[in-house]
Amino acid sequence: MDIQRAKEEIKRAVQAYLATDDIGRPLIPAVRQRPILLMGPPGVGKTQIMEQIAQECDIALVAYTITHHTRQSAVGLPFIRERNYGGRTRSVTEYTMSEIIASVYAAMERTGKKNGILFIDEINCVSETLAPTMLQFLQCKTFGNQAVPGGWVIVAAGNPPEYNKSVREFDLVTLDRVRRIDIEPKLSVWQDYARAHRLHPAVTAYLELRPQHFYKIENDVDGVQFVTARGWEDLSAYLQAADRLALPVDEGVIGQYLRHPEVARDFAAYWVLYRKYHEDYGVEDILQGKPYDAVIARAMDASFDERISLVSLLLAGLNTRFADARATGAVTDACYQQLRSFKRTLSQQPDADPADLFAERCDAYRAKLEADKTAGALLPDEAAARTRTLALLTAWSRSLDNGLDADEAFDTVRGAFNTQVQRREEAVSAASNALEFAFDFMEQAFEDGQEMVVFVNELALGPDSAPFLAENDCERFEQYSEKLLLHGGEDELLAELQRDDVRAEEHSAEF
Figure 1 (tube, rainbow, N blue to C red):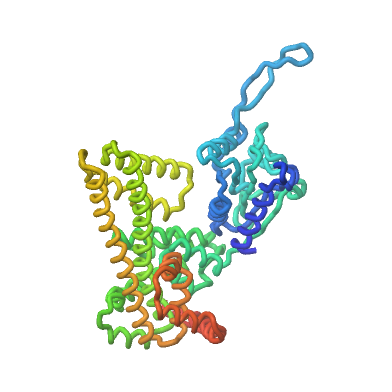
Figure 2: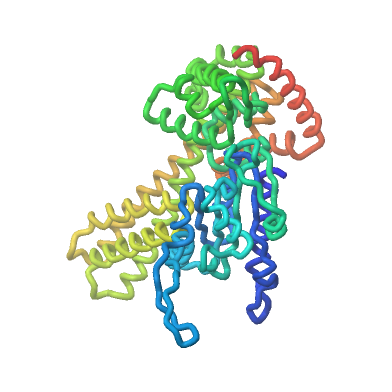
């Protein structure tokens, strides 16, 4: 099955294992809660789905790659204890708590969550000395003499033997005590993940054109050559940093992530063209509504690959503006809540110094933010918004002089807040205007072709564009959504897209 289906299977298992009846008994007794064994090729996204499941189920996560551990760290260190047996004192060997089990208890204390997932990766690649411990772990849910706490679901992952020479086969006794899920890479599922996590548009556009290069593992006389989902994601992160820092990216750099020479060479050629398209078409000029007659003519005559790349570049420019508008809006909303609370506090404590009250509010906000970060309770966007909010609140606090009365203090903070409101309005206006200019260009260059289908579909699905469009009306987006995605023309247009995918294969020689 694909990784998304596997995620749903594991999520349902977690829900079933943690469910209880009206008197608190597990619906599935602990002895029947089989550990989940997730088997699949490297770099397919096994660890990422564990993080997603933990967040969506609001439970903790402890993740270990077991090949990094020795028997001592997994089982614990031995020590001698004196015990009385049958009236005689004898020395016996016991063990300290396993580092892994201790991490589970630490996570419970840090997050305040009693339930969680203990995820052990590369479980079938352990050393000879650790192999019996891993079998005991799967069969008995213990490390040494320490049991995994109740309320914690065990998920283990491994690679099939064709991908790793150190893989150990599990015996029938072990396999009869686990739920095994086998997964395979699937581009369409990964594309949803890539969109949601805002991977570099050059990566996502390239894989639209070269789906056969998404995941490859091959052996030849020079050894193993491979490219994985993890490689694409890590390369995306570097490309985003390189864009911001103006760092050069060439085939040598790309080959450090894509360990398949043919794919690395092909993407390096595409990367050069992708950057060139950005300059040649003047993407920022298009999004600012500047004259572009020659650009429209070139777009109309361009190859399929070039047109799809141009659409990707337009979407990237729009998404930057959508993200800025959303981030500014989130900070503005958070500041508004603090402003309301400050006003209420002023009325409740009329004798207190307003500047001190606002400083206390900033300190409380900072403490809550740090506590939530430590507990892992914040998604990245939320953490960023709250960090920016704290910076604003701190600046406003410094602007308040001691001795101001309540009205003067509130008016000072409200004035600063109004400036933030103006920033939000400007960000929303910039994004809305750019979207209208983008539609102007798309209509002139591509009319109602498949490029418009791609453009509107990505707007509808993007993690920044979709929320922005839900909050800010765009008449042309609604019109095209209805025309291209919701009615009878959809099947015909999607079929045309599929035919173009075939033609795209024929154009691959251009790179």
